[in-house]
Image 1 (cartoon, rainbow, N blue to C red):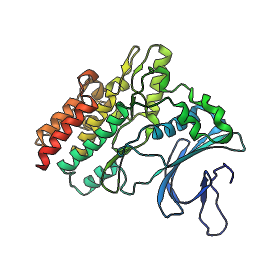
Image 2 (cartoon, rainbow, N blue to C red):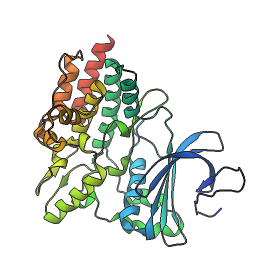
Image 3 (cartoon, rainbow, N blue to C red):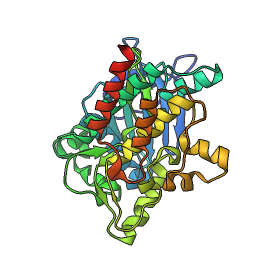
Image 4 (cartoon, rainbow, N blue to C red):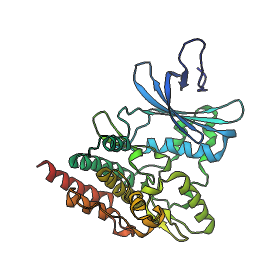
Length: 345
Protein backbone atom coordinates (compact mmCIF):
# COMPACT_ATOMS: atom_id res chain seq x y z
CA UNK A 1 0.00 0.00 0.00
CA UNK A 2 1.37 3.45 -0.91
CA UNK A 3 2.25 5.77 1.97
CA UNK A 4 0.04 8.38 0.32
CA UNK A 5 -3.05 9.05 2.44
CA UNK A 6 -5.60 10.89 0.34
CA UNK A 7 -9.27 11.50 0.81
CA UNK A 8 -11.03 9.69 -2.02
CA UNK A 9 -14.65 10.17 -2.98
CA UNK A 10 -15.77 6.92 -4.53
CA UNK A 11 -18.48 6.48 -7.15
CA UNK A 12 -22.13 5.96 -6.38
CA UNK A 13 -23.18 5.88 -2.76
CA UNK A 14 -19.96 4.40 -1.45
CA UNK A 15 -18.51 6.32 1.49
CA UNK A 16 -15.38 8.46 1.25
CA UNK A 17 -12.27 6.66 2.43
CA UNK A 18 -9.03 7.89 3.98
CA UNK A 19 -5.94 5.67 4.15
CA UNK A 20 -3.39 6.30 6.90
CA UNK A 21 -0.32 4.06 7.04
CA UNK A 22 -2.09 1.41 4.99
CA UNK A 23 -5.21 1.33 7.19
CA UNK A 24 -8.54 2.32 5.61
CA UNK A 25 -11.02 4.47 7.51
CA UNK A 26 -14.52 5.52 6.48
CA UNK A 27 -15.22 9.25 6.66
CA UNK A 28 -18.50 9.97 8.47
CA UNK A 29 -18.66 13.76 8.49
CA UNK A 30 -16.73 17.00 8.84
CA UNK A 31 -16.48 18.04 12.49
CA UNK A 32 -14.74 21.38 12.04
CA UNK A 33 -12.21 23.41 10.11
CA UNK A 34 -9.83 26.30 10.55
CA UNK A 35 -6.94 27.69 8.55
CA UNK A 36 -5.33 24.84 6.63
CA UNK A 37 -6.83 22.15 8.88
CA UNK A 38 -9.98 20.02 8.69
CA UNK A 39 -11.22 17.61 11.36
CA UNK A 40 -13.32 14.60 10.33
CA UNK A 41 -15.25 11.95 12.21
CA UNK A 42 -14.09 8.62 10.82
CA UNK A 43 -14.86 4.95 11.48
CA UNK A 44 -12.26 2.21 11.76
CA UNK A 45 -12.88 -1.33 10.40
CA UNK A 46 -13.53 -2.37 14.01
CA UNK A 47 -16.44 0.07 14.14
CA UNK A 48 -14.63 2.42 16.51
CA UNK A 49 -15.09 6.14 15.85
CA UNK A 50 -12.00 8.35 15.73
CA UNK A 51 -11.17 11.96 14.89
CA UNK A 52 -8.87 12.72 11.95
CA UNK A 53 -7.13 16.07 11.71
CA UNK A 54 -5.89 16.79 8.20
CA UNK A 55 -3.51 19.73 7.76
CA UNK A 56 -2.63 20.84 4.25
CA UNK A 57 0.84 22.41 4.00
CA UNK A 58 1.12 24.34 0.71
CA UNK A 59 4.38 23.56 -1.08
CA UNK A 60 5.73 22.00 2.11
CA UNK A 61 5.54 25.44 3.75
CA UNK A 62 7.55 25.47 6.96
CA UNK A 63 4.97 27.81 8.45
CA UNK A 64 2.29 25.11 8.35
CA UNK A 65 4.07 21.75 8.41
CA UNK A 66 6.34 22.44 11.38
CA UNK A 67 3.51 23.30 13.82
CA UNK A 68 1.57 20.25 12.63
CA UNK A 69 4.58 17.99 13.19
CA UNK A 70 5.19 19.53 16.60
CA UNK A 71 1.60 18.77 17.53
CA UNK A 72 2.17 15.10 16.70
CA UNK A 73 5.37 15.07 18.76
CA UNK A 74 3.55 16.60 21.72
CA UNK A 75 0.86 13.90 21.63
CA UNK A 76 3.62 11.28 21.81
CA UNK A 77 5.57 13.15 24.47
CA UNK A 78 3.08 12.99 27.33
CA UNK A 79 1.67 9.73 28.66
CA UNK A 80 -1.30 10.44 30.92
CA UNK A 81 -4.99 9.48 30.98
CA UNK A 82 -5.66 13.21 31.38
CA UNK A 83 -3.97 14.11 28.07
CA UNK A 84 -5.17 13.04 24.62
CA UNK A 85 -3.14 10.11 23.25
CA UNK A 86 -2.19 9.81 19.59
CA UNK A 87 -3.68 6.88 17.64
CA UNK A 88 -1.61 7.27 14.45
CA UNK A 89 -0.07 9.91 12.18
CA UNK A 90 1.46 10.31 8.74
CA UNK A 91 3.07 12.96 6.55
CA UNK A 92 2.38 12.62 2.83
CA UNK A 93 3.92 14.22 -0.24
CA UNK A 94 1.34 15.50 -2.75
CA UNK A 95 1.87 15.71 -6.51
CA UNK A 96 1.81 19.53 -6.46
CA UNK A 97 4.76 19.65 -4.06
CA UNK A 98 2.70 20.29 -0.95
CA UNK A 99 2.62 18.05 2.11
CA UNK A 100 -0.33 16.82 4.15
CA UNK A 101 -0.13 15.88 7.82
CA UNK A 102 -2.71 13.38 9.11
CA UNK A 103 -3.26 13.11 12.87
CA UNK A 104 -5.53 10.34 14.14
CA UNK A 105 -6.98 10.91 17.62
CA UNK A 106 -9.69 9.46 19.87
CA UNK A 107 -13.21 10.78 19.29
CA UNK A 108 -15.01 12.12 22.35
CA UNK A 109 -18.74 11.81 21.79
CA UNK A 110 -19.52 13.82 24.93
CA UNK A 111 -17.68 16.77 23.46
CA UNK A 112 -15.64 19.30 25.39
CA UNK A 113 -15.89 21.00 28.74
CA UNK A 114 -17.13 24.07 26.85
CA UNK A 115 -19.97 21.94 25.47
CA UNK A 116 -20.79 20.91 29.04
CA UNK A 117 -20.84 24.55 30.16
CA UNK A 118 -23.04 25.50 27.20
CA UNK A 119 -25.50 22.68 27.92
CA UNK A 120 -26.00 23.92 31.45
CA UNK A 121 -26.43 27.52 30.28
CA UNK A 122 -29.09 26.45 27.77
CA UNK A 123 -30.92 24.42 30.41
CA UNK A 124 -30.58 27.16 33.06
CA UNK A 125 -28.77 24.72 35.33
CA UNK A 126 -25.33 24.67 36.94
CA UNK A 127 -22.43 22.27 36.99
CA UNK A 128 -22.36 20.80 40.47
CA UNK A 129 -19.59 21.90 42.78
CA UNK A 130 -18.30 18.35 43.11
CA UNK A 131 -18.13 17.98 39.32
CA UNK A 132 -16.31 21.32 39.01
CA UNK A 133 -13.70 20.18 41.50
CA UNK A 134 -13.49 16.72 39.94
CA UNK A 135 -12.91 18.22 36.47
CA UNK A 136 -10.36 20.64 37.93
CA UNK A 137 -8.44 17.85 39.67
CA UNK A 138 -8.17 15.94 36.39
CA UNK A 139 -7.01 19.00 34.47
CA UNK A 140 -4.45 19.77 37.17
CA UNK A 141 -3.17 16.19 36.92
CA UNK A 142 -2.74 16.64 33.18
CA UNK A 143 -0.91 19.94 33.68
CA UNK A 144 1.35 18.33 36.27
CA UNK A 145 2.38 15.76 33.64
CA UNK A 146 3.15 18.54 31.15
CA UNK A 147 4.90 20.85 33.61
CA UNK A 148 7.02 18.23 35.33
CA UNK A 149 7.69 15.97 32.36
CA UNK A 150 11.14 14.43 32.10
CA UNK A 151 11.29 13.41 28.46
CA UNK A 152 13.98 12.70 25.92
CA UNK A 153 15.01 14.92 23.05
CA UNK A 154 12.58 15.28 20.15
CA UNK A 155 14.74 13.49 17.59
CA UNK A 156 13.60 9.91 18.10
CA UNK A 157 9.95 10.91 18.11
CA UNK A 158 10.39 12.98 14.97
CA UNK A 159 11.90 10.08 13.03
CA UNK A 160 9.05 7.81 14.03
CA UNK A 161 6.33 10.06 12.61
CA UNK A 162 7.75 10.91 9.21
CA UNK A 163 7.55 8.04 6.78
CA UNK A 164 9.81 6.98 3.96
CA UNK A 165 11.81 9.74 2.33
CA UNK A 166 10.90 12.24 5.02
CA UNK A 167 13.52 11.07 7.50
CA UNK A 168 15.62 13.97 6.25
CA UNK A 169 12.92 16.54 6.94
CA UNK A 170 13.72 17.01 10.62
CA UNK A 171 14.98 20.46 9.65
CA UNK A 172 11.32 21.41 9.25
CA UNK A 173 11.13 21.53 13.02
CA UNK A 174 13.72 24.29 13.21
CA UNK A 175 11.27 27.09 12.55
CA UNK A 176 10.47 30.33 14.30
CA UNK A 177 8.11 28.73 16.78
CA UNK A 178 8.33 29.17 20.54
CA UNK A 179 11.27 26.83 21.04
CA UNK A 180 13.40 29.61 19.50
CA UNK A 181 13.07 31.47 22.78
CA UNK A 182 13.26 28.47 25.10
CA UNK A 183 15.92 27.13 27.38
CA UNK A 184 17.22 23.58 27.16
CA UNK A 185 15.22 22.20 30.09
CA UNK A 186 12.58 19.58 29.43
CA UNK A 187 9.41 20.80 31.17
CA UNK A 188 6.62 22.17 29.00
CA UNK A 189 3.56 24.42 29.05
CA UNK A 190 0.28 24.05 27.14
CA UNK A 191 -0.35 27.80 26.61
CA UNK A 192 -3.90 27.50 25.23
CA UNK A 193 -5.76 25.77 28.03
CA UNK A 194 -9.48 26.58 27.95
CA UNK A 195 -12.78 24.67 28.27
CA UNK A 196 -12.92 24.03 24.50
CA UNK A 197 -9.54 22.27 24.72
CA UNK A 198 -10.60 19.91 27.50
CA UNK A 199 -12.50 16.89 26.20
CA UNK A 200 -14.75 14.68 28.32
CA UNK A 201 -14.18 10.93 28.16
CA UNK A 202 -17.05 8.41 28.14
CA UNK A 203 -16.32 7.92 31.85
CA UNK A 204 -16.70 11.65 32.48
CA UNK A 205 -12.98 12.29 32.92
CA UNK A 206 -11.37 15.54 31.62
CA UNK A 207 -8.75 15.04 28.90
CA UNK A 208 -6.51 17.93 27.80
CA UNK A 209 -6.39 18.22 24.01
CA UNK A 210 -5.03 20.44 21.22
CA UNK A 211 -1.31 20.33 21.97
CA UNK A 212 -0.37 22.44 18.96
CA UNK A 213 0.53 25.38 21.21
CA UNK A 214 2.54 23.29 23.70
CA UNK A 215 6.23 24.25 23.96
CA UNK A 216 9.14 24.45 26.40
CA UNK A 217 8.02 25.88 29.72
CA UNK A 218 10.44 28.79 30.16
CA UNK A 219 10.56 31.35 27.37
CA UNK A 220 12.72 34.46 27.60
CA UNK A 221 12.08 37.18 25.03
CA UNK A 222 15.53 38.68 24.58
CA UNK A 223 15.24 40.72 21.37
CA UNK A 224 12.76 42.93 19.54
CA UNK A 225 12.58 40.41 16.73
CA UNK A 226 11.82 37.72 19.28
CA UNK A 227 9.09 39.88 20.80
CA UNK A 228 7.45 40.41 17.41
CA UNK A 229 7.64 36.70 16.66
CA UNK A 230 6.13 35.84 20.04
CA UNK A 231 3.32 38.36 19.62
CA UNK A 232 2.51 36.94 16.19
CA UNK A 233 2.58 33.40 17.58
CA UNK A 234 0.35 34.21 20.55
CA UNK A 235 -2.20 35.99 18.35
CA UNK A 236 -2.55 32.78 16.32
CA UNK A 237 -2.37 30.16 19.07
CA UNK A 238 -3.81 31.67 22.27
CA UNK A 239 -7.38 32.56 23.28
CA UNK A 240 -7.31 36.00 24.97
CA UNK A 241 -10.14 35.41 27.46
CA UNK A 242 -8.19 32.49 28.97
CA UNK A 243 -4.64 33.76 28.39
CA UNK A 244 -2.31 35.01 31.12
CA UNK A 245 -1.31 38.70 31.26
CA UNK A 246 2.38 37.95 30.69
CA UNK A 247 1.40 36.56 27.26
CA UNK A 248 -1.29 39.11 26.42
CA UNK A 249 1.07 41.98 27.28
CA UNK A 250 4.46 40.42 26.55
CA UNK A 251 7.40 42.82 26.72
CA UNK A 252 11.07 42.76 25.83
CA UNK A 253 12.95 40.79 28.53
CA UNK A 254 9.73 39.04 29.58
CA UNK A 255 10.20 35.55 31.01
CA UNK A 256 7.13 33.38 30.49
CA UNK A 257 6.78 30.13 32.40
CA UNK A 258 4.34 27.28 32.87
CA UNK A 259 2.49 29.48 35.39
CA UNK A 260 0.54 30.80 32.40
CA UNK A 261 -1.38 27.50 32.47
CA UNK A 262 -2.32 28.04 36.13
CA UNK A 263 -3.95 31.34 35.13
CA UNK A 264 -5.82 29.56 32.33
CA UNK A 265 -7.04 26.87 34.71
CA UNK A 266 -8.27 29.59 37.08
CA UNK A 267 -10.26 31.10 34.20
CA UNK A 268 -11.59 27.64 33.34
CA UNK A 269 -12.72 26.96 36.92
CA UNK A 270 -14.44 30.36 36.95
CA UNK A 271 -16.20 29.51 33.67
CA UNK A 272 -17.43 26.21 35.13
CA UNK A 273 -18.78 28.11 38.14
CA UNK A 274 -20.40 31.02 36.33
CA UNK A 275 -20.68 30.07 32.64
CA UNK A 276 -18.22 32.63 31.25
CA UNK A 277 -14.56 33.64 31.45
CA UNK A 278 -13.97 36.17 34.27
CA UNK A 279 -12.58 38.72 31.85
CA UNK A 280 -15.31 38.35 29.25
CA UNK A 281 -17.78 38.91 32.09
CA UNK A 282 -15.86 42.00 33.19
CA UNK A 283 -16.06 43.39 29.67
CA UNK A 284 -19.82 42.80 29.66
CA UNK A 285 -20.56 44.44 33.00
CA UNK A 286 -18.07 47.34 33.03
CA UNK A 287 -17.25 47.94 29.38
CA UNK A 288 -13.52 47.49 30.02
CA UNK A 289 -11.63 45.73 27.24
CA UNK A 290 -10.75 42.11 27.85
CA UNK A 291 -7.06 42.93 27.42
CA UNK A 292 -7.21 45.71 30.02
CA UNK A 293 -9.10 43.49 32.46
CA UNK A 294 -6.52 40.71 32.04
CA UNK A 295 -3.40 42.85 32.38
CA UNK A 296 -4.76 44.60 35.48
CA UNK A 297 -6.31 41.47 36.98
CA UNK A 298 -9.70 43.18 37.08
CA UNK A 299 -12.56 40.71 37.56
CA UNK A 300 -15.34 40.12 40.06
CA UNK A 301 -17.24 37.22 41.59
CA UNK A 302 -21.02 37.47 40.98
CA UNK A 303 -22.82 38.88 44.01
CA UNK A 304 -24.73 36.43 46.12
CA UNK A 305 -22.90 33.41 44.75
CA UNK A 306 -23.45 30.20 46.68
CA UNK A 307 -20.20 28.66 45.43
CA UNK A 308 -17.88 27.22 48.07
CA UNK A 309 -15.58 29.98 49.46
CA UNK A 310 -12.60 27.63 49.21
CA UNK A 311 -13.28 27.13 45.49
CA UNK A 312 -13.49 30.91 45.02
CA UNK A 313 -10.21 31.27 46.92
CA UNK A 314 -8.56 28.79 44.54
CA UNK A 315 -9.71 30.93 41.61
CA UNK A 316 -8.19 34.01 43.27
CA UNK A 317 -4.90 32.18 43.82
CA UNK A 318 -4.72 31.21 40.14
CA UNK A 319 -5.58 34.68 38.84
CA UNK A 320 -2.67 36.60 40.34
CA UNK A 321 -1.19 39.01 37.79
CA UNK A 322 2.32 38.20 39.06
CA UNK A 323 3.08 34.62 37.93
CA UNK A 324 5.35 34.09 40.95
CA UNK A 325 2.32 34.46 43.24
CA UNK A 326 0.36 31.68 41.52
CA UNK A 327 0.59 28.13 42.88
CA UNK A 328 2.51 25.45 41.01
CA UNK A 329 0.50 22.71 39.33
CA UNK A 330 1.52 20.39 42.18
CA UNK A 331 0.38 22.81 44.89
CA UNK A 332 -2.83 23.55 43.01
CA UNK A 333 -3.58 19.84 42.70
CA UNK A 334 -3.14 19.47 46.46
CA UNK A 335 -5.58 22.34 47.13
CA UNK A 336 -8.15 20.86 44.77
CA UNK A 337 -7.82 17.33 46.16
CA UNK A 338 -8.22 18.64 49.71
CA UNK A 339 -11.42 20.42 48.67
CA UNK A 340 -12.64 17.33 46.84
CA UNK A 341 -12.10 15.31 50.01
CA UNK A 342 -14.19 17.78 52.00
CA UNK A 343 -17.02 17.74 49.45
CA UNK A 344 -17.33 13.95 49.35
CA UNK A 345 -16.99 13.40 53.10
